[in-house]
Amino acid sequence: MRPAKATRWLGMVGGVLAERTIKEVLPALEGNNEQIQKTIETLSQQLQAKGKDLNEFQEKHNIRLMGEDEKPAAKENSEGAGAESSSAAVLVS
Image (cartoon, rainbow, N blue to C red; front, side):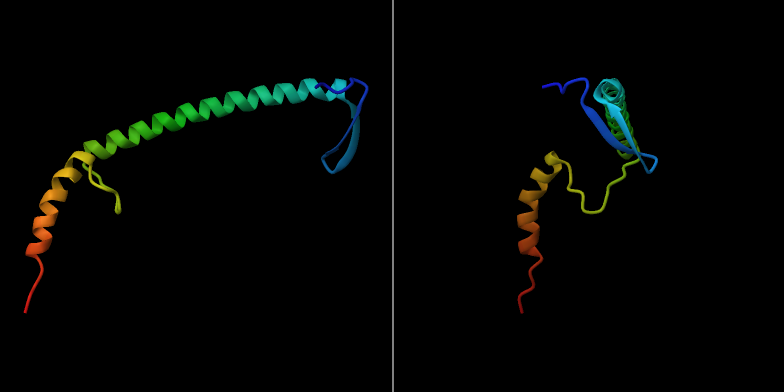
């Protein structure tokens, strides 16, 4: 629902209360909305590209973060071996 074009808009601009009509304000708001959407899309693409670069760098230099789980294939193999090694590590006096 669009407001009537003659409806007043009151807003703070630089600490001063300004009065304008919706007819004057609406195009600026629509333009701002379009720019924000474009900026969000651009930043999302940049974030994905940087994440991909970071993952490639980590793989290339064999960097692992603390608390990071092993790869799924290696984890499955270590579970079977882990059960055997954990029982072998128990000391009984």
